[in-house]
Image (tube, rainbow, N blue to C red; front, side):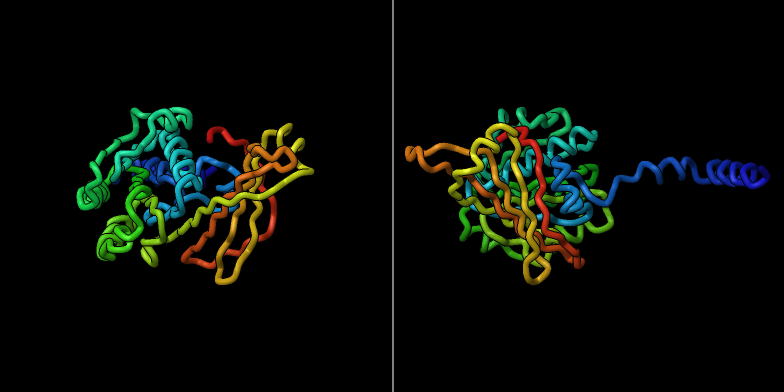
Length: 264
């Protein structure tokens, strides 16, 4: 009883002197930002705050879907987000289907001006207040992305350090390199399935299979719902591979992850 009273007295004294320090500590955001897909969060632990996450791959490989899922998750948690769209390709209808809250999203259109896009990200990161910032370079030619000077990435990384903010960069090729704390490589493949078609059609689930690779990488293979070709004897499924590289070593186990696909 005395211990309880003593604790209350200490808290009261500290509150009078320093304000609601305990409440502010409890309100600190988690160290990661949800991807919006619980099963993937369990495997990847989400996108790291205070750091850069790079998602790169070819067109129609799932880069934008992952971003929309993250934006929807962040805005649903009352995070203020910013999307710097270099090529003005942000699809409002797809974002609406993903349940992105537009009242909490700042969309910056850069009119294919790469320098303007990088300056916008720089201003936003240094201003603070945005839980998630995304830089969309998906439609920028790969050779142009390769020529981006590395000082931009180092500048972004320094601006993010020790902050609750996360930066996601979407690129056609790997470009951020060592400045990224998390790198996702997204690939689109076609696989032929015959025996499992009815099962996949009935349960309406997609599946992820996590496989450890050399060098501390993780490969996630997503099997989506089937699409049909002109050949009735074959059924094609799209597979998405995600290679994960973290700064800290992580132990991975091979397993299958199932989740409902809320949008395409």
